[in-house]
Every structure is written in structure tokens, then in C-alpha cells.
Image (tube, rainbow, N blue to C red; front, side, top):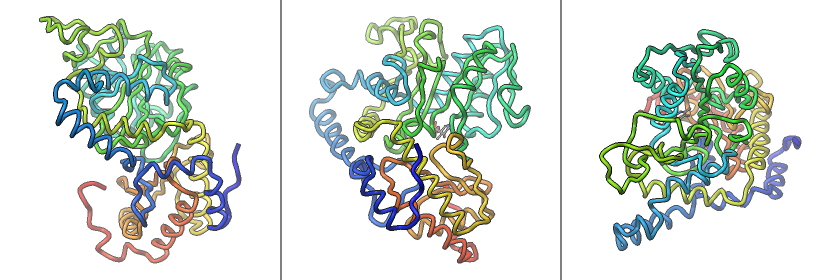
Length: 416
Ligand SMILES: *Cc1c(COP(=O)(O)O)cnc(C)c1O
């Protein structure tokens, strides 16, 4: 069901008033005067996070000390939070853990998948992948124990399908392209990959919690993703990895640390992996950061991903309609068709870096991805229709005023 986009700022305010998700905005700290369109890079702070973290630091660490591993549930956190994320991506309990970073979890997943297909020697990835995915795949291939080759969608062939054959061990794909916001059909592509006898690793960094994913129903083998983007877990909060139960017995990876051992506190001399998903843990979890994820998942409680997806599509549709109306020539690189786009809108623009800097000065925070992409994330949990209306006006105004002529907007910062 799609509802027509509001046609005025007043209509946006009216739509906000009846938005079934509208009240969730109060669960987040959004500074006055800020329209935050960068929740796809770092989600805002859940209002409850400060208290949760204070209690963890002062009571659990400060007072209860090492007893908290048992009394405060620290030991169980990677698995408990994993199950909470599993619920958002359609993975039944016992298949997801929260640990390490997306980069490290991708390394484990690619390694495990290559080892599960020992007679095959090709890994497929996307030429336009988020670079860490390509770098990690390169490293994992070198440590496979046999020569591996890489095929890139977008360089060696136009689609996954044409690159698949009996040599392919694993395909690594992002559900949503971080630059363009283009969305892949997980069901169809996973089926093609399985038909070719290969395994799939889905990177859900730009989709977990804003797009429906059915890990179990589509028999996905592996998934990884961040918790600091749309999941709002806090800067550098640990990532997740999901591995289908069917692979638990045979899936191995080289980072065989004691937290992945069947009995970490037996202090055995030899590594014996846990029978389940815990074999994908490595070392001691970062408890304080995990508490940020806990608070963030609390802030998501009570809303369905389907409702978030529906609102996200309305927000992105409104933004595209407004900028097209205000500046008809702008090059929107995100697909207009709802079923083909994630929760962001990207524009290619020669002076994109300067325009994003000028917009930030005017209270609209988006980001820039080289060489020329202005990227705006639309997190349905806390954004309002009026924010979208205002952001489009400010973007159009910056372009009309040719803000790039002012040199102070072109000084590059370390993080763009
Ligand atoms: C954000 C992002 C990452 C980040 O990985 P880290 O290990 O957390 O730095 C990886 N892959 C994709 C597709 C991303 O969007």
C-alpha cells in the first residue's frame, strides 16, 4: 500500500500527526534544529542509552565487579542480543551472535563458506562493494589454503547470474548498495546461487531493521551487519553474524579464540568448537558497547520492520518528488521504483562535497561518498515528513545559491 506524498508542508505536519510510528521519535535524542539524514552511517543516541550505560559502568562494573559476568548476564550477551537481532532479520534463535566488527565477521563467514565448498575455487563479490568487504575477501582468499579466484559483478559480468558456475564456492553481496541505495532481491538471488551449488553471504549493513529480511525462509547461509547504522547501537558498537543452523556442525573459521570453544572455562589445551553459533565468537566481548546495542534494541521494541519499511518508502518517495519538483535536472542515482531501493536517496553532483557541507551548516546532516555522491539516509524510526520537506528545500536552496563558490565549504575533513 502506498499513500500519495503530501503536497505541502502543512500536509506533512498533518501526516506526522497520524503517523503510527511517530511517537518513536521521542525514544531518541535529536538535537534541536537538526534534521538527521545520516542514520545510515551513525544512528542517533537512544534516550535510554545514557542511563543503561551509567548503570553498567557504576553498578555492574564499579560495584559488582567480576561477579557481573554471572549476575548481570554479561556472559550471555553476545547470544541474547544476537537473538534480538535475529528476530529483525527473520532468523530463529540460536543462529546470530553480536561480536567483533562487520569486517571481522565477514572474514569468518567467507572463510567458513570457502571451507564448506572445498572443491570450488571462485568467490564472487561486487565491484561496487563497500571497500572493506573487498579487502576482507581478498585477505580471506589468501588464507583459504588453496588458490582462489575472484569474479566481480559489474567488472567481470553484469549480474551474479552470469558469473555463476560449478567453480563458485561463495557469493558475497550487500542487500543495499551503500552508494546508490539500490536494493537486491534477496529471495531471487539467493535461489540462483543455491541452484549453482554455491553459498551466499549477505551483508545487511544498510538494511537490518529497515527492510524485511527472511533469513530462514530463504535458507540464507550467512549474514553479517553493523549495529551502529540503522540499529543505533552507538559509535563502533559490535556487529552481528548469523549462520544457518544447518552449517553449525561443519562451519569453521581461523579465529578460533576461547569464546568460541565448547567449554571456555575448562581451559583445555586444544580447541574444540562450540556445537552452535557460539563457535563464531572469538575473544572477550566489549560489554559496555554491547549495552549500547541493548538500549538500541529496546528503542525498537514494539514496531514491526514491515511498518518501518512502509514509512521509509514514503519518506524517500517524498524526498525524490520534492527535489525533482524544485530542481528538475538533478541526477538521482537511487532507483525511483520502491521495490528496487533501500532507505536512502543519493544524488550524483559535481559539487556534492561542498553542498553537503553547506547543508550541514544549515542543520541538515547527510554525507558524501567519493567521487561525487551526496547521500541522505531516511531512518523511519525518528524522521518526520516535515523534516523531509524542509531538507529538500534546503538542498535545493544550496544548489540555487551555488554554495560551492564559497571556499570554506570545500575543505575536506578526515571523515566525510
Ligand atoms: C558500514 C559498512 C561496513 C563497516 O564495517 P566495519 O567493520 O564496521 O568498519 C562494512 N560493510 C558495509 C557494506 C558497510 O556498509
